[in-house]
Image 1 (cartoon, rainbow, N blue to C red):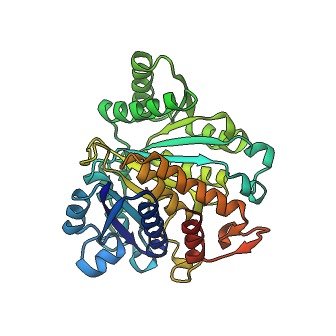
Image 2: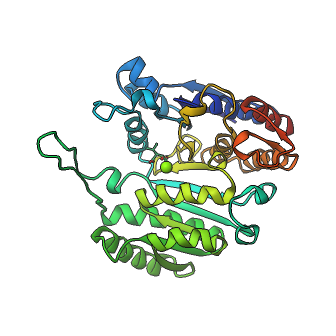
Length: 361
Ligand code: IPM
Ligand code: MG
């Protein structure tokens, strides 16, 4: 197969981790006989510096002309001035929005080799295998907003959802549940928020009508924050609106051992020429400016995001599994980046970790 992948390295450790993921994709191409072409674009802080815009029009065009997008991370102290008119994060939210990527899939699976490195007890972590589906283009991230002015010192953000927005992401989550263990936990705050009451009603109605075979439960977001630590193995697919999903997935990343391990896929309705969703793939972690440029960042979340790219945007399931198996093998062999180094056999940097995955492939 021939495929075009847009690569948006972004800021901080973004370029370091995407370099490794591209090398893994190149190795997959060689081993399985595919031709992947990579085209690079600017997003986030580096785009503000170079083009005066966190999401330049060329970057949007580049993504639209590709089969899938691989993204590193955006942001950093250089662009953190709260009074600045442009923020790197606007680039990230903007590209999700213009590509119509309403569903963000964040799988969280226990890595057996890291069981004893976790801050949680092994018996709590045993059997953890969940998929968080986060709504990505609605809610309080995109609702009407007002910044405070020096005069009024009043600000607000609005959590706004419509029935179709809730329906499409619920459908995608329920479909995933059907292909997994057949259970869906929908997260909301229906005891307080109007948008959550609509969320709960729409999810209930849609599931009854279209997915009677999938077991549905509603969980309040504060309770879910607790359950994820107390009995994480009890969940299969967890569906949440944008902000709740953002918060819960940072929490859930600790179930896998590190933020540096969690990949994500953002999908929408638009299909690429392969007849698959033109997705965007990124680690759930940020740009980690504190360790940027030092060659110590963990590239595995981005490498695993590349595996999701192979699976969801190119339909290359065997190739995706080969990458995941290579990552498992490297971890089982005892290789660790510093973020997961507790009691490690061999602590390595970003490039050596990437090279080890390539070698296993
Ligand atoms: C994430 C990140 C982003 C988000 C930030 C960087 C805007 O935290 O992908 O989870 O909040 O969506
Ligand atoms: Mg986040």
